[in-house]
Structure formats: C-alpha cells, structure tokens
Amino acid sequence: MLVEITGVSGPGDYSPVVMGTGVRALGQSHLPLNPPNVTLTQLLSGAFDAQWVEIEGRVRSAQLGPNNVVLGIAANDGSLTAVSVRQAGVNYESLVDSLVRIQGNAGAVFNQQDQLLGVRVLFPTLREVEVVQAAPRDPFAVPAVPITELFRYSPDPGLLHRVHVQGKVTLDWPGRMLCIQDPRAAICIQTTQSTGVAVGTLVDVVGFPAINLFKPTLEDATFRTAGSASPVMPLAITADQAIQGNLDGQLVQMDAELIGKDLASTDPTLMLRVGRYVFPAILPKDAALGGALPWKDGSLVRITGVCNVQVDSLSTNLGEGVVKPESVHILLRSIDDISVLQAPTWWTSEHTLESFSVVGLLVFASFAWIVVLRHRVALQTRALRGSEERLRHLSEHDALTGLPNRILLNDRCQTSLKRAVRFQTCFGLLMVDADEFKIVNDALGHQAGDQLLCQLGDRLCDCVRATDTVARIGGDEFIVLLPDLRIPAEAESIAAKIVAAVAHPYQIDQTQAVITVSVGVVTYPEAGSDLDTLMQYADEAMYAAKEKGKNSFQVYRPKSAPAGGSGGNSLLHPPHIPLATGGA
Image 1: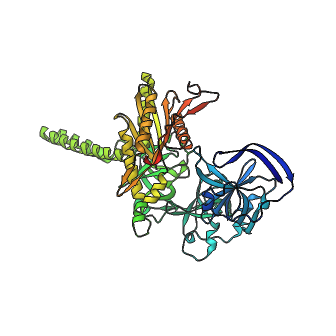
Image 2 (image 1 turned 90 degrees about the horizontal axis):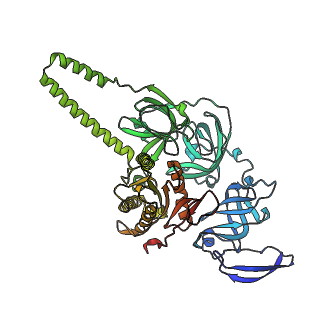
C-alpha cells in the first residue's frame, strides 16, 4: 500500500520519527525491490535502522509466543533475531537448520540511554522468507554421529549444521540438562525440553554443536526416545581417576565421606571427601525433601552420578592447547543415587584405643605417665583443631578472592536476621554485579580477569565497615551484608560509595581497565522478613539498575513506602546517581 504521511519530525527513542501523523492511502504498491543484503556488523552500525533490508543466515531456533514468532538466526558474523506475526497452521519448526534469506525492516534494540544494544529484523509473513537450503525433513533421519567425532578436524562442512547423536540416558534434569553416553564417549546437553525420560533409555538427540567451558555440547537441542530403558552400569572409580579428566560425562560410582551440605545454592549440594580431595555432589533442585537431606555428616556413602569435570581455563589458555582439569563435580539424578555404607559413630578405632590407654595407665602407670598422656592428647587436639580450621576456611571462603562464599554468607545472614528480630533493628543487603566484565575478561585474558575480580573485592571491602561482610557468590557477582544499621538510608549511602569507588580505573599489569557495577539494595524489615525474599528483591533491584543504564544502584521498597508510591505489590525506587562509566 502506497501512503502519504504528514506530521512533525522528532528525535524518537533511538532514531528520528514523525509525530502527530496523518496517514492517507494513495493506492496499491509493492514492497521495496532489491533491498541491500546487509551483515550483522552493518546493522549494528545503526545506518540501516528502519530500512527494508535483506539478511542471510541459518535458522537455529523457532520460539512461538501467543501472537509472534521469533527465529534465532546465525549469520556469518554473529547472531540476531527475526520477528514476525504468528500465522495459524504454519510449522515454523521446519525452518530450523535451513539457510534462509529474510527481507524485512531493521529494528533497533536500545536501552533507556538511547544506546544501540542489538538489532532484529521485522518481517510481515513467510512470503518474505526465501529458503536457500532447506533443512532435512526429519533431522532424526540424518545418520547419527559418534560423540567422539564432535569437533574433531573434518573437511565436511555438514558438521557446522545441526547434528544427530544417539546414546543411553545417564542423567535427566527436565528442562535443563540431559546426559547420554554411547559405547565410546559421553556428553551433557543443555535443553529446554521438559519431557522426562527414564535413565537407561536409548534416545536420539539433534542440536547445534557448541563449546561450553572447553567442553563439547549441543545447543537448541531436542530429543526423542529410540528404544526402551535398559540398565546402564556405572564405572567404579577412585578420586584420582576422576580428576584425570578423561571420564567427563560418564556414569561413575565412588565411595566418599560426607563432610557437609549446602542447601542455600540453587541445587542442593553435598560436600564429599575422598583422601586429599574435596568435591561437591549436586542434586537436582527438587531433590531436597521438605528442605532437608537425610544423611548425617561423617557418614561413609556410595554415590552414583555423572562425572562433570571442571576445566582450569587459565592453565589451559597458558599451556600448549591441552585442556587441564581443575576439579570434579558429580551430578546426581535423585536421592536414590546416595546409599549409606556406614553411619557416623562416636566409637571409632581412635576413640577405642584412647579409652583402653586411659584404663591401662590408671592401673599400671604412675601420675607422671598420666601427665605425659594428657600432654600428648593436647598436642593432638590442637593439630586436629588446626586441620579443621583450615578445612572450614577452605569450605567457607572463595578460592580466588579469599572473600566469604555462600556458606559463610548464609550463616552471617541468619545471625544478622536473628539480631534484628530480637533488638528491633534493621540490616541491609546489597547485590553487586560487575557491568561488562566479560568484555574486559575476553580482551585481557582470564588471568587479568582474575586480578580484576580480586581488586574489585578489595575496593568493596574498603567501602564498608569492619563488621560488614563482602562475599563472592559466583563469577562477577558479590553480596554485601550490612548488619546493625541505624536507619535504612545508610545502606543507600554505602551503595553510592561502592558505585563511585568501583568506577575508578584498575591497574592490571601494564594495562588500565575500567568497569562499573550495578547494585541492588534491600533492607530488613522494609523489603521482607526472610532471607529468601530479601535475596530475591536485591536481585530484582540489581537488574533494574542494569536496565536503567548500569553504573548505578536501585533500592527496592514495598509499595506502601512513601517515596513515589502508587498501586501494586512492590516498586523499585531508583536513586540513580549519574556517574560516568569508564572512570570519567
């Protein structure tokens, strides 16, 4: 349709617009002919915003909404999305793995500061989609590739497409992860498919090959059963065999001593010790019955699960190109994968020997021998306490920065909550997340990234009181606990101090790096009366700070708070502080 538009030009949100428009139809027309074939790099320049363009790429996924469909497109120079109105009766899934050319309007994805953060192409119907190379009618009909052949050198360009692998299921966390193994190898696959499948079932899996933390996997994967379930026998191994790294993805069995449990993490985790090794065994998040696990610390247990090797990325990058294992996680399917071989008891062989020694000394030895024995017991006790303290410190502190980890943070949060309830005081929680840390990490390397995280932790500690706690809970995310606050506004003051302090440049070897942080602020009892609620609201406030442009903090307050209140359950009130990013 050819139209005439009249109005007043304006700046718009990202690019110029016409406001107060009047539209008059002039007659039938056609879509623009011979649109420019553009790359993702050209679209990200903003020069083609709102123009009719053509892109070429391979369809990686098709996500269906109530009204729209979103196609994930892998172009030669990156990934973008193509969006259209959902048409009834159209099988969009059949486009996955097809090479297509799509004509449509280039659309900008921008933030509240009118900065271009991404692009997408808006196309009217499938008439604007040209299939250059159709996907196989049935992706499962493509011959299965052995797991060991993924990412081996091959001149076959077909391996760049969606591939088909087959194996027996060793672990199924519906909607999250599926692990399978064939006669020679194993692989764990991230999938959103929520269909449950029994362990031992033979399945066909199709997906796009990808590398995740130096390990092969499949992305945008789907699967279907190819045979009935049959037993998969676990491989009995030792801790030394597990840490070698060649059993990644395999179903294994191991005996270990239970030394602790972590129920605060997303997935319940058991801390196990085998000789000189300490490693976690991870259960699916719904495995903790009533929030508790039935095993006692000190139990000798036998675990059966999937060996998940963690790679030492620094040593791998600095080495000769061979992946270096760092640690091992055991992924468990359910609580049935844990059996108690021996319950903890006070009457150990050491205690029994000490008891007989005391009796013998009382009968046959003099008072001098008793003094000597007591001295020796004291020495042994100090040695054991020192060993326990070292183990406790390792289990409660982050190995990189030396800051408290989730376990110690949870304990201190519980203590602060009890004090606040008893003395009718308040305390604060700050969720701190580094902005664009991945860009610095990728540009300077993981070793420089580790130095940057350590310096960031030091700056956070410098901004708080000696009685406060700064904990690293993973990646570039930190939690700051502020107990015994006089007024909630003190938390906002500390958050502003952190944002300002972090923005100054960091000296990494001979290079200067600049990062900022987004901080979410909550206080007790204003934002909630339990730790889970406070953590959730702090996380929401932190993401609100990122959406507001990063390099700032956001305060979560209930709807009833006087500042800017209006109807609803809760509000994020943003005391945004205009700090220039990049240390300006």
